[in-house]
Length: 88
Length: 269
Ligand SMILES: Nc1ncnc2c1ncn2[C@@H]1O[C@H](COP(=O)(O)OP(=O)(O)O)[C@@H](O)[C@H]1O
Ligand SMILES: [Mg+2]
Image (tube, rainbow over all chains, first blue to last red; front, side, top):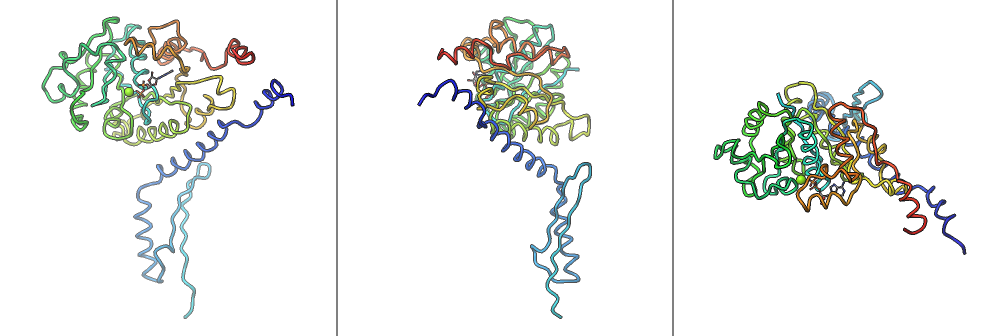
């Protein structure tokens, strides 16, 4: 089998490890920046929201999630409360 | 008023001290009164890289503690009269660097100098925090390698939220990317992040690229900042960086594989 020059140029075209590094870093950096920019009051707010909800219905600790997302210029605060099954 | 520049990175061993010595010398060679402060308490190295290790009598922490006058601790460079260094302590605890103490020293220095360079220790703890706190500008030294890029980004987060400028709600610290130990051949082979890749990930202004160069080890062996070796690519690239920092438009060099390199490669040179 003759290899060498042809394979050398072919080999150049395949995706190198640098492309993998870039992809991993882009995901990681975006993730870590989002975590950094998350306002510190978010946890506290989640806690207090849970207390308010509990005045009316009984929900579990993990029944409420608060997420802050960036969509273009808008920041969206997403609040999810899973209410218990209605059985009365 | 002096301009305060931190040379920082998060990750260790990426070329901060090499860079602080080179840029400090470069600024001074152009007639700017420049002082480089070593913040690496316990692991001082700047004195070695600058070749003045045998002239250290007092250090930064002696000054902070009032055991010596600033004048007694500053070492004037033998090659360039506008360049001084303030060495770190080899023995003291890092905690001796208090925010107040550092602030007082920087305040006094800024009455006499045009540029104050702060050579940061590695990490994101106390020493690195003290080095960046008073900065106006930050040179973020990065290698084209995943952990270095990630740590640089963490440092950017700290500059944006914990610096004096951030705390006082002033204009943010100006941040510049300095990519070093760059190997164009490996970039061409797809084995190393390119300068565009790193810039895209970090979204920073590019101050310059320093190639991987044997001249750097030779420079540190002899205690001569590599910028004084204008035969070397690294020395020339640092000189370009100083010019760019001072606002001149200088094209980026040494980003591509030179022809000789390629021929060598094809014919097993
Ligand atoms: N452009 C370069 N080419 C080759 N070696 C380099 C280059 N820049 C730095 N080095 C080497 O990397 C090592 C760490 O450099 P140093 O400046 O001490 O880093 P830091 O201060 O970030 O810990 C040293 O051995 C130095 O000689
Ligand atoms: Mg160092």
